[in-house]
Image 1 (cartoon, rainbow, N blue to C red):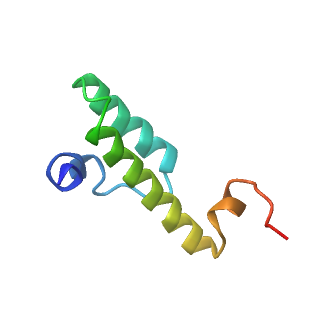
Image 2 (image 1 turned 135 degrees about the horizontal axis):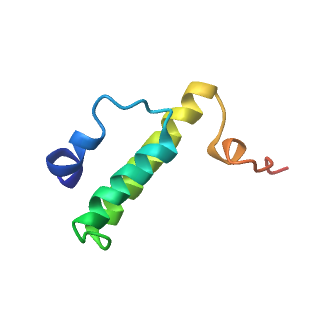
Length: 73
């Protein structure tokens, strides 16, 4: 509900490739309103995870590989 009701305006039209830029912009928006705890940060976390998932699917690899990890043997 927080994403659909309040945060979608900061996301619509943005490239899913700009994970860091989106995170910083949404965080700055929330911080300017004093919303840096609880459900607001959970919503930002959900957005971040979804964007990384999109990137992983686009590149055909796991999140651990995207972030520089090595596969488990």
